[in-house]
Figure: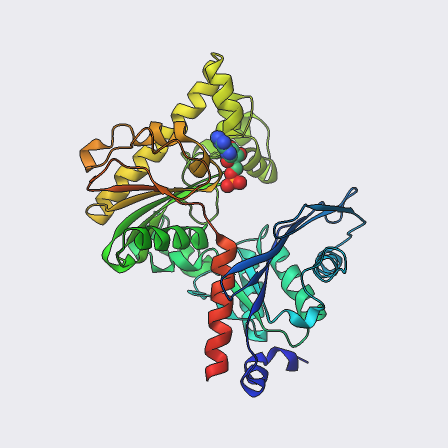
Length: 420
Ligand code: AMP
């Protein structure tokens, strides 16, 4: 039944060249994709499918250097979505390849790899079972990832598929960083521990920072701040993640757009009782109605808060202040955990685009041997060192590129197997 999953053998036999990689990132009702030519790591096209299984589903497809094509069609499930993406990629009008056989490999973003997956892997039937087993600890995220994998396997039989996990980079965390203060049996029985997320992003920006410093990542202590709608910070000591702010789920750590981040756990039964909420409702409350949206009562988007605060809205100002304070506290904590720091990196929507927030976070960190250069800091969405000249601790803005990490891992794994 799983003959087509013995791709390692097929690959070894055919000695196939891997050039074009299809990167797939499936959410519960969305699919993001990119087609990347690994010769020069060139993005050939990218796309976004939204509202899968709902009314008004759409596909936005953008061939490199051209306009976005907006297609409105019924997309009842992920398999139809993947077929539409391939149709767009191979279209005579706006496609970038002649047919599907030009896709040499597929790289899938998978959110949770538990303790089993410490690196990206070629998907076999055994790996599929492993990803399925992680659904218990990631019930919202892993099932849609699996829909995407299964759809691609059916549609592109014989094309190697690779899984790249958000959690894998953080599997180097030591027990002191990942254990909760709960009875140890909960960890053994149910895997209740801290896993961390955004691993591909933290890995990418840390590597880039090392390249920009012309040093090896293994010689540096880097604090990577992925500040977007979801936000997390990682302490990367000599090439390895030793701590990160998200935990068992992406709810822990910083306050975020709509997520509370860490709170006293005793608040949960208290609110359940006072507000008459069940488990599902409190989960929704903490994930979708809290964070900066909850504090400001206005928006989960920092752009809205920045302009409201400028107009004198106190609660928007408060939400900004709470967020920046938390980030600063994590940075301080990770300096202590690593015994120092050589570089701080800002990435993701807010980290890449808000000079105001970067300045607010770094203001007061001078004791570490760093300072933001106010002119250099006026950058949005571009890679740049923003610390003052000769600062002992460098500060960078580095746009993240999770798709490229997925494509690189897919390419490297397939090439390794071909060489066997
Ligand atoms: P992400 O989840 O990485 O796509 O980041 C999205 C978030 O980044 C948005 O919700 C905004 O809060 C924030 N963001 C994006 N652009 C800006 C900007 N120019 N200024 C401030 N915040 C921004």
